[in-house]
Length: 290
Ligand code: GLU
Image (cartoon, rainbow, N blue to C red; front, top):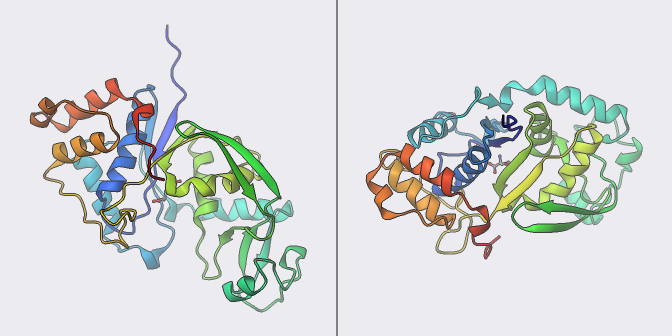
């Protein structure tokens, strides 16, 4: 009898706009990697910042994923419903002395080359001022293995790079929420765009601080437009046409250099996903851009 797979992967979009081709490629890569390993594939909506998220974007993203046959194996998780868990994690980090209050402005930090003029790390932040909560990084030359890119080495600078966990405006930050939720959802493998690559070493330290084991990571090159910019809402990447799921999935498989046969173009989204699963070769992905 084969042992049930423990693989748990996820796609975790921030709902800043509709699903565009670049996010479809990431969603598809994480889906195929999970399914080809008999794993479970989850969707998490990273709706942490209402000021950057048009209210309709979450519905649009979920509709698009449905239209492309990308159905999650468990109910969708919304970060906007997870505030108590983030509070608890911050309390835990503050108790351990691994997080601190900081009222420095970006300007002040720039003027001091990232050092905190008010010695925030020592608990010296003036009371009465609005403050953020930051994670206290440790100096480290962090080594980790990317499943596609191979050995990685990143320098983590204590104090200078300390990421915000809770912003002054009261919003929880990505660096905290992503780790807390990947732990909560038992994610073993993260497949995401390489625009997140530089975050990884800091996230490894946050995992350790929360007494958890980091997942494996596989970073895929981000899709760029003709000007070489990442497809994103800021660069006006158009939303996907949900009436053309086969065409979109076919193009996404090509963007991942999986070379699907033309005959699939007359099939259904399910046919493409099945073909993608049984022929999935992450090592074929072009590594030219990052
Ligand atoms: N929410 C992030 C984004 O949309 C992805 C985070 C991740 O996969 O770790 O870019």
